[in-house]
Amino acid sequence: MSPQNHEQVVTQAVMNRYVNVEKTKRDVLTALQHYRGLGPKLDKFVFNDGSDQELLNLDGTIPVRYKGATYNIPICIWLLDNHPLSSPMVYVKPTPDMLIKASRHVDQNGKVYLPYLHEWNPNSSDLPGLIQIMIMTFSEMPPVYSKPKTAQPPGATPYPLPYPTNSPGYMPMPGGGPNMPYSPAQTGANTVYPPYPTQPGGYPPSTTPYPVYPPASTAGYPPSQPPTSYPPPYSAGGITYPPYPSTTSSIPTGATETSGVTGTSTTASTGTITEEHIRASLISAVSDRVRAKLRDSYGGSQAEVSVLRQQQADLNQGKIKLEGLISKLEQEQTELDKNIRVLRDKEGEIKNVLSRLSSATEPLNVDEAVTTTAPLYKQLLNAYAEDQATQDAIYYLGEALRRDVIDLDCFLKHVRSLSRKQYQLRATMIKCRAKGNMAG
View 1 (cartoon, rainbow, N blue to C red):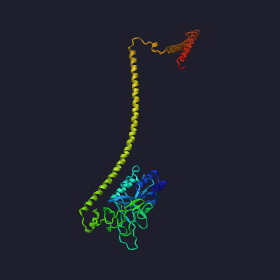
View 2: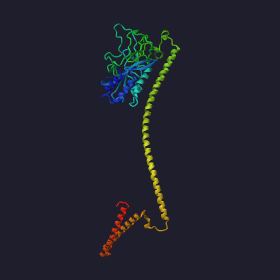
View 3: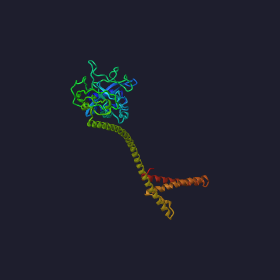
View 4: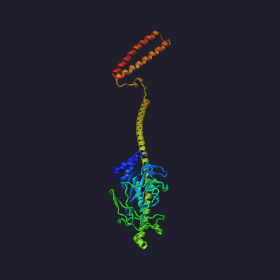
């Protein structure tokens, strides 16, 4: 399927079904761009309680490097309708010629459990990172291995079904029993898996050494059959898909279950363990332990980085607020310093005036205390002073008449004279204001 078709399928799937349409679409298209073996599909997902819902899933294979060769592990990633707020659900989907190898990361039903899924963060976690963690994990412990080939009578089914026959094509959910499928295990047009031979020797031998699956911590797997040749890698759509890892001669039995040493033709024939075998076993054990510590360290470091990023964002916001407060305080400090300088200047002027007044021996002349800068202003000032004095004289004449200090004729005579003088003074003030262009 071309990238244009991928985008069309994803857009139709997430529209009106997912809460965060743009984030989901961008996350899915980024994963499809990096991992061409996956394809988008819209299928029904059946939950443990029996309810179903149409969800978008990425179905196909991811390349896993194991023992020097690259293998394609079939998986299916289901996205809930509130993606990326909730972590995806990941399942391993083995082909009819494969069996699931249960481990601490994959259960018997194929569901994948990873610290990355448990610590899923909507802001920092995404599908490409999840797939990368899966590739690292599966490179240490592949989740599937090929079925041992056994002789079958004529007419028998060449591929025994690894799942119950009452619900063919479905993968059971954990804890749901064999009759609780989660999705049809159908292969779409965009998903092609490597063919497996129906009989030993039915295909030309491969030149690629197929890795053996590392032994688990618990025994109980049946002994494998002699090595069976598998076809060489094939190409589909421009992408080369090598065959899947085989367990034909690599699963030890009995007391050799925990040795971790891969059987070879020499060991099978002689039954002895050489120094090279011990060295390979030690290297494999040390490599597994180093990878496990590296994975744990990577998960812890990623959690610490997420916390540090959140703290960095909080500190940056606090820094912006503090810078704003500091800038405001600096402006207020500048304004305060300016006002202090002005007040100090005024205080100095007042002290000078007080010292000059205290040192003066002659009494203060009120008429000389107020001076003008021009003769026009002086004339205006004198006319205003005389006008106010005339107004006071008229007031006191009225008070004297009311108290019978003077008679009416005397009152009228003096008032007439003062009024004439007051009229002349006010006319003079009007002319002075007009001459000096002052408001009236």
